[in-house]
Structure formats: structure tokens, C-alpha cells
Image: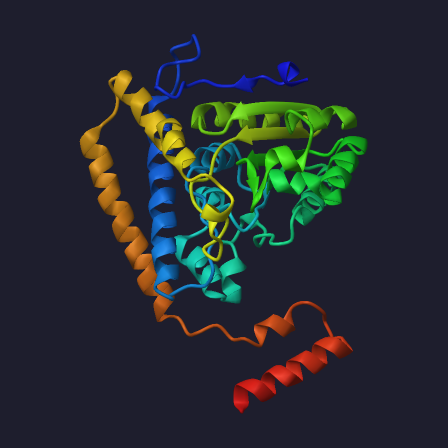
Length: 350
């Protein structure tokens, strides 16, 4: 069935055009490049901070910038974003501050709070649960007569969860304005996709629920943006949900607590670098004669300063309160949680 879900692409890995029209927006593409550069520099800084013990365990996303930034760029204020723990390129594109994201990885509860007016939910750590939340939020907007949409981000491993199928089924049955956005990076921690499923694509899973499935090159930011723009417009006009499979590759570990050399041939990373999303867009812009070296150099300097300032601000903040772990799950602590809390307080005060 993979021939029914071709991999959509607008920019080839070598930077050549895979589309006929010449009316692409240079300003938009340069903006994409700077946003991807910003996300990559943030990601590398976060890994360094974790290695230095300045933040907790961190989930890197290098390689997935185009998928996240291309998709988030098609949203409007008021739309709902339901990210995982790896979708910070998407949340920062949509409006989260770098300081807030650093605070999240430091364990501070205010690291989950978005700027006023932005519907960004806290990162979902349980796998696939956010799909149901996105369906519910988008359905509520439809019942209120609003044209807002919701996007749920998830990885290929989430398609093995029941929540994935329940979310698609509910979205289909109630025609909700939901975009199910899967970043297929070929591994769910240590499990390769060929052990996850027999299906040749993730996009084809949409067929069972009579919704549209689209497979796009997740390393092509322009293609991702166009596909997402189409899915968002479709959802706004009441034509229901879309399942998007963005085929990409993550270079680093699942998290900084993981050792990918135990299960993944690391030489493949170097081969994949030639298809890197940032390099691909740079090649395209150079071939079109619109890559501004000085502009990018200035942007790199500005981003480095922005990141350093964000680090300085979040490190000036008080340490997170461990009691927060017990305060925001239930209105009243359950007997088992009350017992755990008491035990915890004894240990930290002894």
C-alpha cells in the first residue's frame, strides 16, 4: 500500500527543486532557516547543560527541526498545541520562551506555563495520551462554533498505543478539526519501526478510520509547511482530521539517559547528515542565490546571545520545590500519595 502514500517533497536532499512553480516566499524560507538554526543551537546547548548537571535528563531533537518548525509555522494564535517531551522546536516556534523551556528541564513547574494567549499544553511524557486531549479540545472548539484547530505531536512508537487508535477513531466519528502529526524517526527508544508494525507506512493507518493520511519528507521544511497548511485549512472549514506522517531522523539518543550505541548503528548518522534538514535548505537557498551569509552570521550571533541570556535568567531563579510533585495531581492527596509525601518529607529533613 505504500504506493498510495507517496513521500511528498518540495526540496531534494541536494537542494534542487522538486516543484515547478517559482513563486516561493524567500522571506519565509530565510525565516525557516533561522528558526531551525535557533532550535538546533538551543538543543545542543541543552545537552551541554545536562552533561554539566545544570538541568535534568533531556530529550534531544536534532534532525527533527524541519518537521516541528514547518508544522508549527502553519498555526494561528488560538490554535491548540499538544507536544511531547521532544517538541521544543515546535513550542518555541509557536511562542514559548527559551527560558521557560529551560525551566521545564530544570524541574520547575512554571516551565509548563505558556505565554498568555497561547494554547500550548505541558509536554506529554506518557506516550500517545495527548492525542485524546487534542481531539477533545478541537471537538470543544467546534461545538462552540470556533474555527480553531488542535495539533497532537507524537512519534512512531505512539502508533502502537491504544490511545492512537482511539484518538483517530473519535476524530473520524465526530469530524474534529485535529491534525495528528507523527514524526517517524524510525526508532521508539530502542525498537526500530520494522519491529513496531508490519504496515509499510504510518500514513496508511488513516484509511481504517476514513480520514486522510499524508506522508511527507520530514527533512523538507517547505513540504512540511505546505502539507500542514493544507491540513489546517481543511480542518478550519469543517472537513475533519488529517494524519500526517513526517519521515525524519533523529541523530542523538532518545534521552541523555540513553545509550543508542547499544541498539543503533551510529555510522548511519553520518550517512543521514547528507540529508540534514538545515543543510538541505541552505543548499536550496544557495542555488537560488538568496542565501545571505552576513544575515546568517548575524543571526547566529544573536541566537547565541539569546540562549546565553535565557540560561542566565533561569539559573538565577530559585531551585524547584520537590513538593510540587505531590500538589497538582489530585485536589486531595490519595492515601498512598499522602504516605509517600510524608515519607519524602522525613527523608529530606533527616
